[in-house]
Length: 151
Image (cartoon, rainbow, N blue to C red; front, side, top):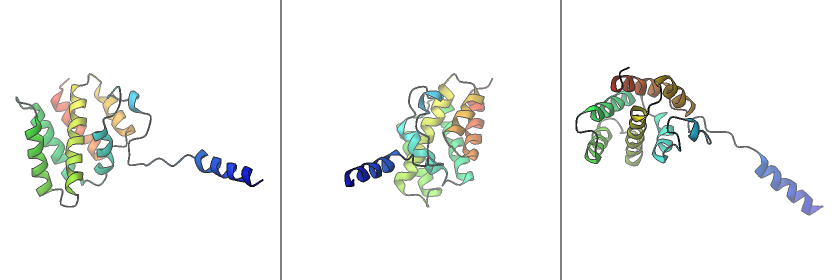
């Protein structure tokens, strides 16, 4: 009897579904997004931090990243380091340095993939919403996407 009670308790403990984090990228949506295979780890790590980011800071960062990507030389490692340094000093005083770097790197990867993919903007917007990206970040990314890929 003691053995069967233990089995039931173990089953109940592992059988329950944990509630999904509303700020994180849901598990299992990788192949159904514009990333096509898997959502990169830097984007997964960035999404929860975007919920802590102020709207003005997010808009400025996305605008700077898209401008750098549209420049003739593109965005290289040195440009990412410069953006990290710029935004850490000015805007990320409330985030630790590692988190600021995660936000910049994740947004860079996200915007670069949006611009390079051949997916319609409406689908990109839907996928970003399904990934739990904050609404103000989705609208800023869509604005940058429309500037970078005129129809």
